[in-house]
Image (cartoon, rainbow, N blue to C red; front, top):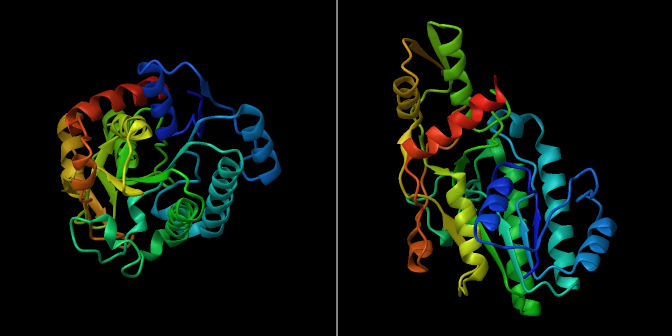
Length: 305
C-alpha cells in the first residue's frame, strides 16, 4: 500500500509519519513544501499522477491560534481552500482508493450543545475569531461528501479536538492555547518570574488530545470501513483553561501569581467533542494529560536549550 502523507513535518503530520513507521508501512510518500507547492493545482496533480498513491492523508494546513486567525483571516481561508481542493481533486482524478481529510473541532457552531455531535455541523453561527479557518475546513468536509455521493469515492473527514505534542509551535501569539501556556510556564521557571500572564479570563473549557492519539486514529480509520464520513476524534473530557494553568504550575513547581488578561478574547466558552461514534468503530484515545505533557515537555526542552 502506497500512502501519500501531505504535511508530514507539522504537529499532526509528523505524528502520523511516526505511527505509519511504527505500524510497518514501508511505502510512505512525503515531500517538502519547498519542492511541492500544494497551492499550485498543476504541480499537485502531476505529483499525484506520478506517485500513484493508494491512500492520501491530508494533514497539510495553515494553522494558528486565536490571535493569528484574527489578524490573518484572508491567508487562512485562501491557503486552506487551495491546499485541500488541489489534493482532493487530484486524488479523485488519479483514482486514489482512500482519502483522509483532517479538520478541526472549530468547524462546529459557537453555541453548540455539549458534548458536540457530528450532526451539529452547520446548525448555527461559527465562532468569529477563527471563522475563515473553520469555513475552509467545512468546505473540505463537504467536498469529500460530495465526491463520495457523486463519484462513489471513499473519502472521510476526521475532526480532532485541540492537539498538542512533540513538534508543536510554541509561539505565545500564533500558537494554540496549550503550547503557548507551556512556553510561558517554562519562561516563568527559567527566569524566576513572579507572574504567569494568561490570555483571557481562564474560564473557558477546553478539551485536549495528545497528537499521537490523532495519528493512531488516522491509521486506524485508514483501514476501517465506515458508513459515516465525518468522525470526531477526542478524549471526550475537558477542563477550564485555569485548570491547565494550575496543572503546569504543579508540574514545573512554579511559585507564581497568575494574571488573567480579560481584555483578550476567550473564544468559545466550552468545546468538548462527543466521541461515541469513534468508540462505536472501536477507537479511543489512550494518553492521559500527564503522559502526553511529559513527552511534549521533553521535546520542548530539546528544542529550547
